[in-house]
Image (cartoon, rainbow, N blue to C red; front, top):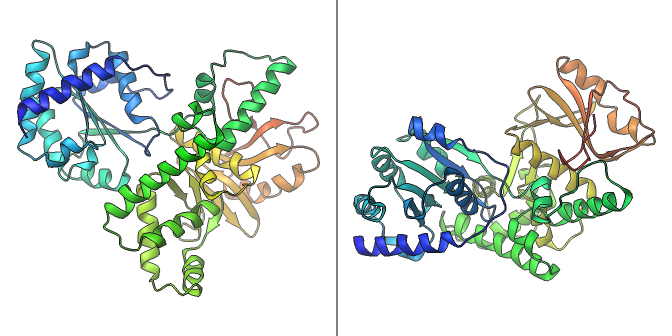
Length: 419
C-alpha cells in the first residue's frame, strides 16, 4: 500500500471519530496496566455488539489527543490488499501524523487480515498501546495461542445489559420507586427481554426497523463469518441449522436428532458436517453452548448472545426462555462461564464455581415446590455451593425456604435485586 493513502485514511478517521458521541458501557479496561506491561488489549464480541464504540470510550478515558488515535477498520475495502510489509508503512505514517506525541492504535476487526499476529508483534516492539477488536473466537484463539502467547489480554463484550439499556433510555430514577416508576421500569424490562440489547436496535423506534436490523446482523454473520470465511457451498443448510439453534435456545439440543431431521427431508449430509457448521456458528459469537456439569459429554444447552436474535424466525418465544437467556448473558458479563446440571433428579439451570442457580421468571407459593424440587439432590452433589434463585421479582408470600441463600433480579441498580 502507498504510505500517503494510509495517512489520508487515518486523518479522515480521526476527523470522523472526533465528532462521535456515545453512551458509556460498564466494561472496564485498565489501560494504565496495558501501558505498563505492553500487553495488547483484545476486545472480542459479536458483530454490532458495540466493540468499535467501546474503543472510542477508551480513547476518551485515556485523555489522549485526537491526532494520537490511529483508527483502522479492517473490514473496509481499502485494507483488502494490506500485506506484511505494509505494517512498517503504517507505523511510519502514524509517526508522521502524531509528531512528538505517542501513537495509540485502535484496530477494528483485525481478524480480516490473514496474518495479523506478525504485524501486531511489530507494533508491540515499538512500545505503544494497542487495542484490537475481533468477532471470531476460534481465529483469535489460535493466533493468541501461538505467536502472541502471553502478549495479549482478552476481554468479552456483549450487547447491552439491562443497566446499560436503562442508560440508553435515560432512566435516572433510584429506588425506592413509586407505582408509576415501577410500571415504567417493568415496561422497559419487557422491551429489553423481547428485543435484546444490540445498541442500534435499542435506539430504533419502529418495530419494523428493529426487525430489519436484527435480520441484517444475522445475514452478515452467516455470509461473512461462516459461509465466506469457511468457503461453504451449502448455504441453505447453514441457514436451516441456525434456525434450529434459535428454536432450541435455553434447551438441550441433539446434533444427532437434527441430522435425522435433515435426512428425513431428503438432504445429503454427514453428521460431521453439522458439527463443523455448528462450531462455525459458535465461532461467530452469536451462539454459546454450555455443558452438563456431571456429564460433559452429554447433550449441551444453547444460548443466544442477545434475546433479539429470536425475532428473525418470526415466532413468539416463551417468556421464561427469554428471562433465562438474559440471566445467562448477565453471568457471562461478570466473567462467569457456567455449566448446568441435568439428571433423573431434575435440573439446575446454572452451576458456577460457588453457586447453584435456579432461574424462574415469576416465583410464588404455587410453583415454589416445583421449581426447587431438584435442589435437594444438587446440594448433596455440591454441598459447598450456595443456592441462588434468579427471578424477576420475588413474591411477597415466598419465604426463604429450600436452603435458598440469595435472591437475584436482572438489574443491579434497577430495584429488581433483592437479598
